[in-house]
Image (tube, rainbow, N blue to C red; front, side):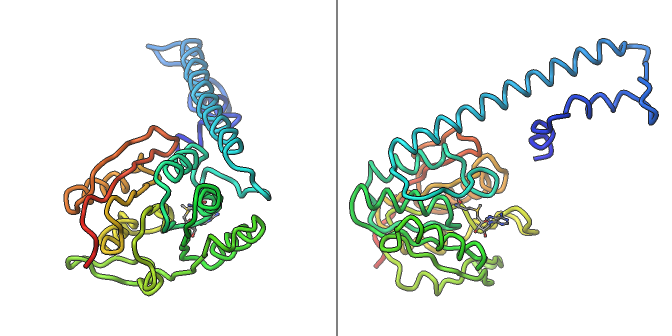
Length: 268
Ligand SMILES: C[S@@+](CC[C@H](N)C(=O)[O-])C[C@H]1O[C@@H](n2cnc3c(N)ncnc32)[C@H](O)[C@@H]1O
């Protein structure tokens, strides 16, 4: 994260160069490396970082254009990346919904994903999106967006407080399970919440599968965002060891994305 921030800083090169100067800005010389060599190395690194950032940005612009070609959005969209999924995740979300036509979609950490899923459900068949957010402020913002896009008949936004829950003798905080009382036969589960950033707990999204597995339909797909992150990698490893799920695909999206499929039976 620190690297990402430094890469994006317009004065990154000057900031780097300061490391080689004393507090008065006078270059520190060392025996092995002349200041010119250090500058050359910094310039090369800076150039490489610029190229990498250009490539990443181009991929996201391409994905955004692709989304706009698949969906006729009826209003403005909230920002992507940072707290939201990146456009490349949303493109794969569209593909999964178009290919598998899920009827019941649960979106953990709704927002941009709920809007895209809502349009797909409307376009590719009937179904419902239930988008859950633990912060009222963000649940309300998503509800307003859904209303602006005239998707209220297909997307339901639910505010669910994070509530203590015990799974195999371990305590977690996860969405209040009462939120899902009337939810069953989930065909597509999007795991992009609760927010890991700012939490002092590990693997905050782990409970999604143990707690919702009995509500999945056989063959249900599970999309995991932020799969490049250590917490999500450990969650996916544990899920695959402990539950009847298989890896369908791992995508090199900006934040990493994993598609899993539930291989278990229908809940009795
Ligand atoms: C990772 S976001 C995912 C949102 C959604 N899937 C999307 O693509 O827009 C999950 C959680 O982050 C929190 N969140 C969203 N925007 C935020 C912000 N600007 N500041 C702090 N938390 C935020 C919300 O509570 C949300 O449930």
